[in-house]
Image 1 (cartoon, rainbow, N blue to C red):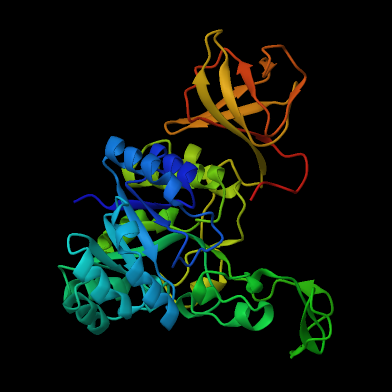
Image 2: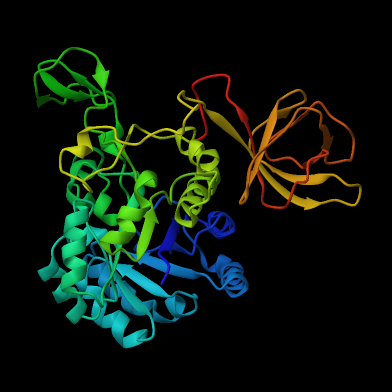
Length: 410
């Protein structure tokens, strides 16, 4: 069985993008009980669209239900049986064992996947979860390749999944109290304020930029720094090792990130799994999308988390940042392509287009057309517009341009 590529879907648009750009499955959250409470998530109004997309693609959709439940939340879960049952989920991702009886009783045909929040990183825990009815364990990020091999050998019938790309947490398997302490927003309830990414000043104590006067003793030089922020995970160079270790699914982090991020990261890992000869043309996008310094995390050793260990494509050893301009929609009757515009496009911009199997198309001889069908000098976000070009574009292609500054779409 081929290894699964699992991509994030913070909303319906990202779900479409994930599937179009190579994901075998996607994980999404409802408005309740998801650890990415602010990702947009899915509402009952999107049910029809999601159901049609699943039917058309035949791909899998997993529901994240991975918060740590309080008593009132576990009671509310029982009232949502019918609503949950209407969604075309293939599995539920949970960390709170108290949800298992409800899910097994009401949705026996659905798989149970153990969330990474449960911190399963040894074979004895894996055996226990299997006995409880779990079909898959999403391992804690602290598990090494050797750990994965040993767990798989001990419980061969259990599917194993691991995060292979994206942001990591400074806390053990993401079980962090820092956000609740500093911002009154609990990461374990899906409302993390990402306090580990904030800027802190180091002098005789640790002080967060927006909370002057609150000190956490430490000795360091003056000036603000993101000392608590972890590096980003990137295992694009090690797909074979991940497969050989016994993983069934490779997971990309990022339900709160942009459509552009979902497209280029999913595409790069799809090409790596498929072993395409021109992988570098797709891999280079991982260094242009918004990211922190990359690392291989804990897969090879506990020391690797502190060191960068991801090779850039040859002849691409410098940073380039892109502005995400939008997506190509349907071709109009006059031969132009309608656009979903996300950032301002000006005549003269050197535009780049990418597709699921098209690394890059360039154009600076296009014509911009406004919503009234007239040629125009610029198109703005939120307004109708299209483009006339000689390029062989297709619906779903991503449009971007090089940024002239350090600011980029995240």
